[in-house]
Length: 228
Ligand SMILES: CCCCCCCCCCCC(=O)SCCNC(=O)CCNC(=O)[C@H](O)C(C)(C)COP(=O)(O)OP(=O)(O)OC[C@H]1O[C@@H](n2cnc3c(N)ncnc32)[C@H](O)[C@@H]1OP(=O)(O)O
Image (cartoon, protein in one colour):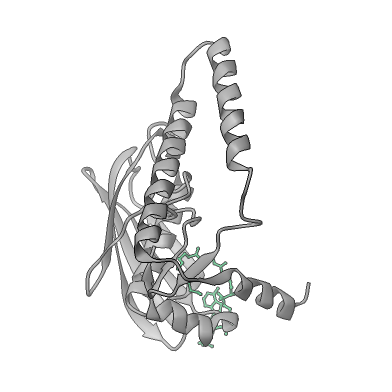
């Protein structure tokens, strides 16, 4: 596939919609509840100690649920949807998507100089025994630093991300802060820290770049709207 075709396809996953605020709130509630249920299922799957016959029964029920959910579905991914009320939603996002049970999910608080997030990472995010997987920590940083650039109105995609793991992060509650250090043209340089009750566990820095294909219309849309 040519670069032009790929860029065109990439721009195509951004959709416009016109959903009244009340309806959107209802849809969000349904999405959150479904993802919470499946997240609980994932945790139960990792930790279960029941006998094989109970697993077989659970699989039957899971199969039925999968069939129902698949009756109607989006083609490839949820993408990002811009609503006429000035919001946008990326409900499939792997870290923040309210419809995505893989997402912990991260819910950021935005301040003028930084974004923060507190989240509980349970047994589904294990790497070394009892500790959070390093790749999960990288993903959390990627989203947090990306969110900081978006909050500072200099959004971009990750060009380079580097992480210093200072000590193991025990499964459980983590606190992350991220901020934009400086901006050079289309590049925003962001930094972040992850801590727990044990203190500072990891630090990150990264370069976030507004890609060529997104400069202009999509950049304006992302900049002009708030959303999840
Ligand atoms: C809608 C979006 C917002 C959406 C924001 C949403 C927030 C999402 C947060 C989650 C973050 C992700 O998961 S993002 C997903 C993971 N990341 C990706 O998939 C990115 C894949 N890579 C790419 O798409 C591209 O290589 C880019 C965008 C990184 C750069 O390509 P480009 O757009 O063609 O940029 P280009 O003009 O060549 O270069 C611009 C400047 O950046 C420098 N540069 C280029 N690549 C890199 C690099 N990897 N690391 C450092 N610096 C780099 C160049 O030297 C140049 O510097 P100078 O000459 O100007 O000095």
